[in-house]
Length: 249
Length: 249
Image 1 (cartoon, chains in turn orange, green):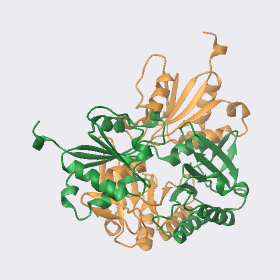
Image 2 (tube, helix red, strand yellow):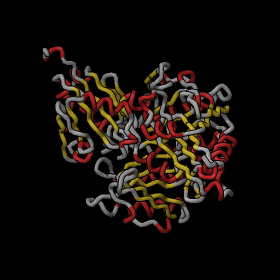
Image 3 (cartoon, helix red, strand yellow):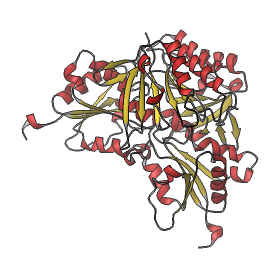
Image 4 (cartoon, chains in turn blue, red):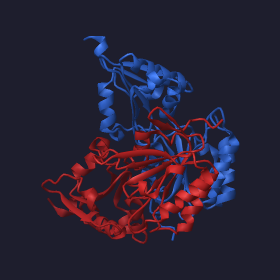
């Protein structure tokens, strides 16, 4: 084949929370058509190797390098899929790719598509019942990319307006104490009886689900594989489920 | 077969925004195994008829009746799927089903599962770029189930804490003016230059995408098939895309 005739493209694809049954056919088709898969090591590990497919796994916190490398490959005629866990547009690789396009009209002209996936908070909510059944917020608790004061201000604003909340990246080895502070703010603003769900590694063999009230919640209930969902003032239990009523009337 | 040996179950499944390529294999398997499909008319219309499958389509605003009917069928040994557009846990049927379980321990004991789907705001965000790439809120603008004052309070809280926002059900024939009021509140709190994306019927043949600044936005840009996404203060355009940077530092 004449290399000049090869049309490069880049898809930023969401693999969902872990179970292959939660990967959309659209994403599966893109992976099947790709020449190159790019992503964080544990996400690339979810792609089956095959002849003609090159896997490029890289470490965490090199998102901009990874985005530029993928754009460079697409620019040279490769069919490239950047894989993210969950949905690529929610605290994942899509924003990094668009940031990398700034000042690069050549890359902006490429065939670039974002392929949505099942994001962690919705997989977690489904497993618990329907805790996000009314207005809600999604907040990344990692302070790598924003000041801790902004995280606290957003949690207070969300609690004040009685949103349900989903927290991504609640806790890591490098910042074991920030989530404890968020729990304090929540107890202060939402009271001790508010329901909180810790959903770890949903849809994988390591799945673990725990719902308690804020008075009982401890920082150790979360790690980096956990999504935390806090109900609004009407969230309640029924049988083994947790749900937020549709109505606020 | 002895009817006593039949095990009933109920899945509340998300069909995604419209394109069959965005339906998860998990949902497809549940539909393939079902004896009965229950849902709002246009969603049930997306299910292919086959021998042994009964389709129960009902009108809008009868969510509780629909939930109870589905639970009754599962209770009598049927394999039932309630279909929602998007994700069943986001402004859809999952909460209604759990509400219907209150005071019914017999129904609480049933095999009930929520199967997540690609919710409209994430399909819309993917098409536009990555406007929800940082902390965001999801707000249902319908005032069927909550006071208009609460909607306005939540929009103000979200704007004040610089969340991006996704609005479901922004506008309908029965309340043509409420979305105009929300646009006024947004212009007041976010200023005229803030980017707003109108994403209509994403992934269907009627898909239409429009991004303007708040100064140019009009209520007529939205209808009931539109999801509206408002960026945060850092949201910007690059080429044909809209994205929100990952960092707030």
